[in-house]
Image 1 (tube, rainbow, N blue to C red):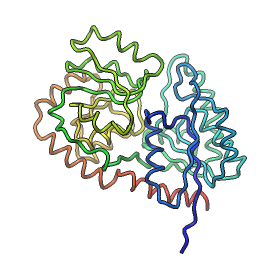
Image 2: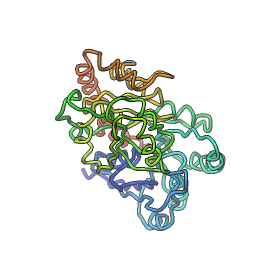
Image 3: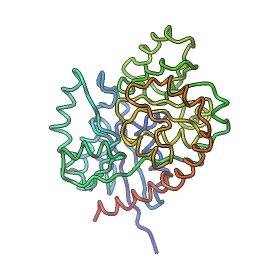
Image 4: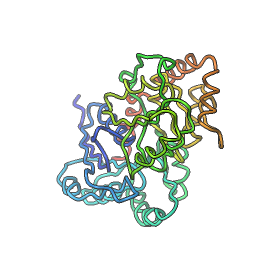
Length: 342
């Protein structure tokens, strides 16, 4: 029996470029792990971003590429970028279903709220109206979007490639406290200077955050390292981390959580998005969760005296293999695509 090929078009604001952010890594793994009957094409933005809005790349030639690309489904990613909006337009022009995945819901303050409100009240409703299926990687982001639509929002988590993320170095043999992710203001990476250990910032610079962090060097007895590495090199980079820290204001489902735990690294994070729920599923409870007002350095001092962390991380990795492998995520997504076309 011959299996019919389904042609997917991922129309997203960022891809390639070393896979330096969560959305790009997410889509890269969908392309890699979706069943073989799915043929994927990715069209992404390579242009400049609007100042203070790293995700707002404006599609130009990408729209023409989309118009000339044959597809059966268009899949867009993220709330707050222009590619999701123009992907919805393409889906109308091409008369194909639209699938929309949220990776988080922005909490915007200051002058940036102007563009946020334009998006919320004029662009997002259009995407919602066109979308045949809406997916969120976290309950937190879904709850916020449900204030804007009565459509069903499915929860489908991020995943991790467990064949790739295998540690060769026990975490206690490493010395760095590491921030992993985009350096943008909502990640609050400056909180890393609460830590009295060597620091490493791993990820692309956005909106001048790296320069601001470099000005804080005088507050630390250690000179921080700033790295940008290819995605394929991330396992070796994690092996240099004693702790992985994410002090974000908001998240959906951080990929770094799964990657760090898969690498046997304590993942210290604020209580955002899907983090608490995932820690509980992994049997970690509040071991690595930052409480309101708690200093990161204080959390690390406590963990340095805590027994049984290696065993807890090993148990958590086994559960990740059961629920959060990219292959299992993609098998669920394939069902969504079938339903979107029916």
